[in-house]
Length: 313
Length: 113
Image (cartoon, rainbow over all chains, first blue to last red; front, side, top):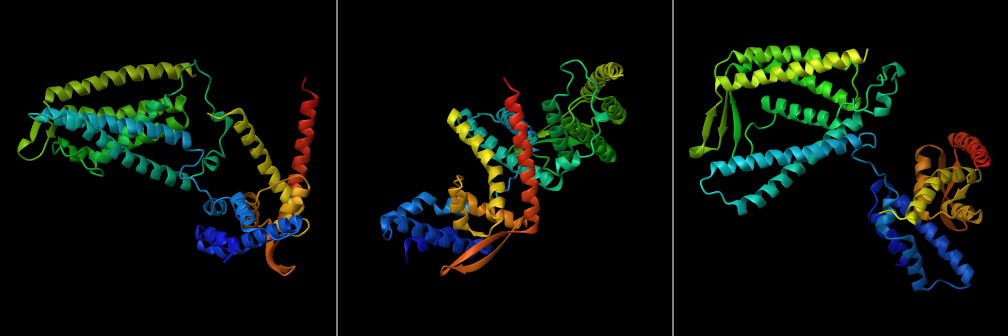
């Protein structure tokens, strides 16, 4: 078997079955032509070393075969900036959750071993981040496969362009990304789509029975907020429509919280497993304080949004 | 960090990539097998390596711009490429676009101090 046949045989091994023979035949024919051409120029047949030099020029069989294969990307170019933004915050969020879990675990142990805990924390962050990376990539891949942003935006109208406002009035994409991540995770967690206990030392919120009646409504409000946050990600500027939608979402959110406000001991936190398990009830007063805090923040935010609404007029 | 020469090579390659499709369609107004096409392009001053040319020919064939058949020529099996009707339309469209671009580029350089 000569060098040319050995080379094409090697290229073939890296090609998909349907291309293999066809590409190899053409490659062999091309190499034979090239050898013939060089031999004519030299006035003699090529030596083994000259043939091998020719093959070296052509490149490694793996690289030659790679040129014949499509190079699909998992994340489309259009979605890539959004993907990177999400990825960054997914990793930050995962690291934060793991640090909190490790902290809880330390508090729960009588003699915590810090030197054991630090590498374990590092490993947990890496492990969970890889899962996060894989899931996020899969979601973006499926999104990119099903929707072309170019088609999606094909029918855009110049009338939909935002009014020019004061510099710095853009909606923070980082903020929207964090909102989406927290809300998606929370709604998945609330509905048992992801496990409610986390890690070896589970930390679990225990809801009173009353919550089940409100669960569909809470989920609906959160999902509506997710949709709104996604629209803020794609169009990161304030419009009157967006402000109205934001303000309207406060109505069901405040209504739900007003109902929860009246409940006695609606929430407890459960930490650990087996004999070491502990449970702390959030007192009704604390819950009410948190809800009042939310009402105040919502009032300030609503006031600012009304001002912004007027400014956009 | 990308050096000036790397950046230069990248820019040149980008420019060549689009032009190569046009050159191949233009050259295939006469039938060619891969090696003869490469030599023809080389003789005309456009050196193309096989790793670029053959996959390009396949891509253009998949896009129905070219057709190919195995033929025996000079006692050797060769895959001969020809321009398909869609390829002829694409060739004409690309040529028109190129001429327009060339005129525009000429105007720009003429009117730039």
